[in-house]
Length: 359
Image (cartoon, rainbow, N blue to C red; front, top):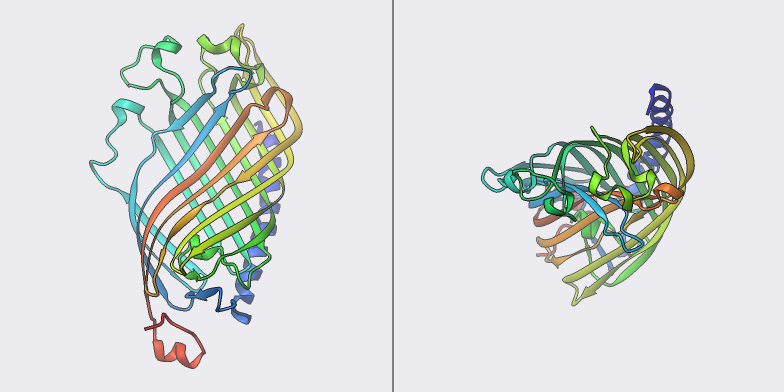
């Protein structure tokens, strides 16, 4: 985007972020005023929940994939991180680092330099995702070097010149918040004891910026992809409402599976430069419709003091604008958690009416 476009985008984000986050903040302020139905959910937010975890954060860009043309998929060289974390009341902190020797595959997928900050705020009534990413250096997972006519030392075709930046937030209200807990699957400071689900509704706002030295569509594939997908740089601002449903199936009180689908649609503002097939670049500003989707599943096994489980969180942002209707991008993370719950000052908690894990 130009300076004017970036200014508009940042002002929109600055005004919308507080609106989205205030809904979660209001839920945190009132969290102590009521309780879950204990037959369905046991709340452990008043005690310390500690975790060990392994995780990977990622993003993806997908161009095309319709009308019998194989999609062009760009991925960064993701890292596996190991870390520790803890939750108490409304505060959660996780610290993860890469382990030397685990992430040594630059000879296959090239090197990615990145900043990746993702946060999840799960209260009794609200589930909010925040993300900020900057990735530089991608590989193409859907085509071989031979198909593209490239000669490189890596196994996959790589684009070290390709850089993308995104920032965004999405939030949904949990309507059945007495008997259903989103936190139980994704924050581990609650225990969903019986099967239950809830309608979800909220909103989202995202900003995505892309730049490269040449078109995102390699020369060998140029004729197969729409002109709007030949991106060289661009900025994309999206916002709108979303709604969906989440359900947790509980088997014999301890084993659980959680599924959730949230979809939305709204305004998309785009200012992008495309590289034409004859080498001519075109800068265009357009407004239209975009879509947003989330499908975070999770599952695991709950004890009174321990928990083990896997969670997956992904957000997809795409466009309904004619020459870019075959383009979408994703952010997300996968995490394996090993959790232990500790009582903090059990006598004090007892006087306040708190309920720690049963003996």
